[in-house]
Amino acid sequence: MIQTVPSLAVSARTAVARAQLAGLLGRCLRSLGRSGWRVTCRCADDRELRALSRAFLGEDRPTDVLAFPTRQDGGGPAHGSILGDLAISVERAISQAEVADRPPEDELRLLAVHGLLHLCGHDHDTAARALAMTRATRRLLAADAARRDAAAPAVPALVPPATVGADEQRPVAAGADPG
Image 1: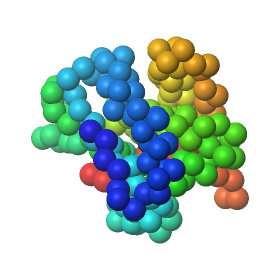
Image 2: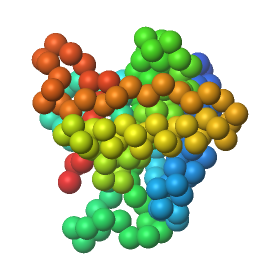
Image 3: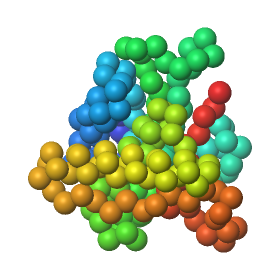
């Protein structure tokens, strides 16, 4: 399920519609062997992502995507249940798309896949895990692009936080696990 907050501008709503996130997430879940599991995705603004980041990460700043895995009995989700929730800042996606010189819907797809991979247990906290997550992102987005008869998008390599300097920004913000 994809939700868009009422405060989004018309251009932001248009980018979300063009990204076709519900179909993308469904196909990615099937490709990852998680057919039957569900993900909710809230397309919001920087203000909401900042509030979520403050509440769940203790960081008073907006971010581009947050992932909130659902836990059952201390373990992973049961088949057919909700895998988790994503929150994406459409404002930040549009801004990042401009910097990367790509359409906003491509950036939204990248953030949705990034968040989904976090829900599935991927992370980029070490070099090996960052490489694996980058490869999974590229594979999923290339398959999506082929289905749409489009060129595979450029996907920046993820960098583990320990290798990022204090004045550098990570290519894609890490997801959050509130529990």
